[in-house]
Image: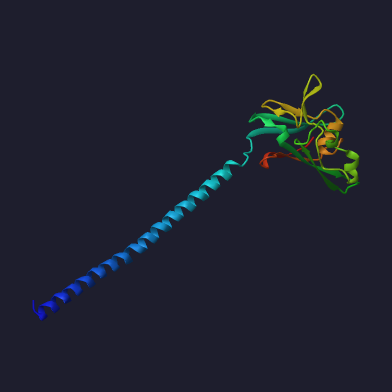
Length: 220
């Protein structure tokens, strides 16, 4: 092989190496963006799965408000109207999970003028009705020093004139009727013994979820 042939062969080898190198560089540049996109997709899927799992677990931990139909009325009684709650149907209700909120609109009419005061009270079933410290104190309430949250165990179910199931330590089943029995028990729920034709707004709240089972207005 002469000198010219040797140079030509070396030139061909150099061109071949450059060509292969270009192909390798091109392949590396093409693969890198694909790997990046795939990594981003994987990370996105993992984050979405984590968020979905968290949201699902959070939702499952939320208390659901029972579904029940209640009827609330003020009915005539011997010495005072009776505050009556009737379970018309639906889920059983643990009264220790329920609170009754009343807004008694006391209307006074001196002459032709009329004024109105609203007295709010909560009968909280989570308070043990067997503990005297949880009872409604009308004197302190009227003086503005008593709690507006209490539980005397009323309304309650009655059989043969005697209380059976007290508010706060019983389960209200479909068909059950819970009622106050006298002026004192009426006062423990509504703050007043002598309700006339004044309206009372009533809410029955499921404590664990804060959901409303009943909301309405009653008049004697």
